[in-house]
Length: 199
Image (cartoon, rainbow, N blue to C red; front, top):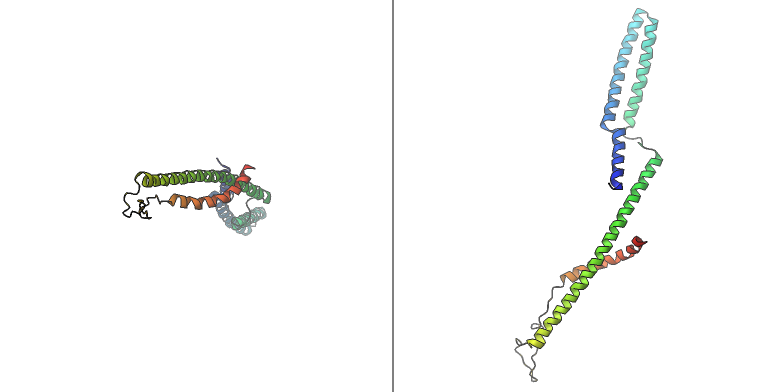
């Protein structure tokens, strides 16, 4: 598993553990129970007051105070659930550093791949250029020396035929060469990166 995936799982785990659905349900349940406890304590206080039972009243008052504290705490937790930091500043800085290091390593590896592809493009382009030059020379030899431009109707006084560009056969599809020229220009920028990758 790569480093980015590990960090992503860690972040998702923190989010789920500290703000996930289970946490939200737990807080909501504690608020509901505290509200119920407040209502019950208030009723118990009224009953104890009506009966004049000081011990029951003191217990009900303590239960009410405790329920109010629990309610306030959980409402406060609920309000800060989406705003307070879930990790310490040092944990945050450590994770930022890990992500940056992982991205740096990824970029370095991918730059090396691009540089290798640039080298392949240069090799293919040179091979293609050589094939085009060789093929066009061969066409010229075939036309001039073997066929001797027999399809040229105009013959000079010397007996040689006047060859025009319409009679000269040449392979003219230089699209690969044109396309790779732009790719190679971009590769020049990667050559500088190659030095950084090798270091």
